[in-house]
Length: 427
Image (cartoon, rainbow, N blue to C red; front, top):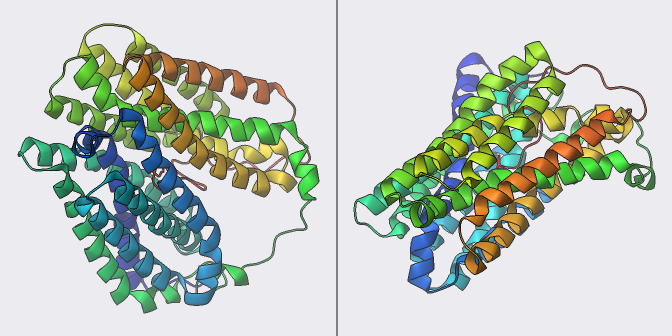
């Protein structure tokens, strides 16, 4: 593998970390700002589904097409252009006169975020190695945690929610300029055996089974559904917790915003800590403990009581959920067989984007028609369903040849970062 010299490599690594933080920032803004956006545009609570769906469509589209773009223009130009696109979209958020314009901006933001996510993952896998790949995904969670603090600070200062998006748009613009200035440096350190960072020149994989054979495997579809359920829990908790804590449990906006930030922060800390634990104890044990912890946290949120109980449950859900996405991704080959793993992972990542948009939007409909208190019960049902699905798959013997033992480190493997938000990494 060709790697850039030490100083340029350190510079690119720093930019990559900042880029992953920037990917998470917009996801953290929406949950805190939605009450204000809803009031400004005079739309119902469930209208957030339009924003989430548009962002997800853009993210999934650009994620799929990013490989073709890399082959034509290289990763540096892709990162520069896509980050600039994200900055323009966030600027559009800050000046949108009606919800329809904001939804269009969400689509554009998804297009930019998905391309940045795919481009950085493709580059980092070959140029930085697995350790930095893991920490890059952890820093996405850090960005999501910072987002609510920015919006909470803006609202607490008496400013409109638009200022929060404007601040993040300016940060994205600075990052885009940094990518423009380092385009040539990114070309020097592509994936293994590829000086230009062109994934099309990577070593071809072994012949794969037919698509029909892959789609016939029950483990492929149970794994895909598991990703829908997991991401639905992660995103729904972060999106609707602010509403629950303010309208349902009587917390002030400042305290509720801090609690949402603590949720995303616990996801970041948990990914780091439990990733290290998984190396010693194994992915299976950590996954079971994490899934059980998610159910316990959801139960704490569901129990009627003081706000502190819901805040504790929120932090427990975040810390427990942290390693689930990367460990489920890394153990896919054990469930479906090594020959089917690539296609199964592709289906899982796509399903994660769907779960991040449709389920939280559906919860918004329930909240709008019943009560915000339905959130905890819904999270608990989803967590129990995920446990049942995982255990049924774990008891099923693997298909095909077993995969080699893979160190389970936090945030490794493909991950949603885009509008999911989160998008998530996450997505």
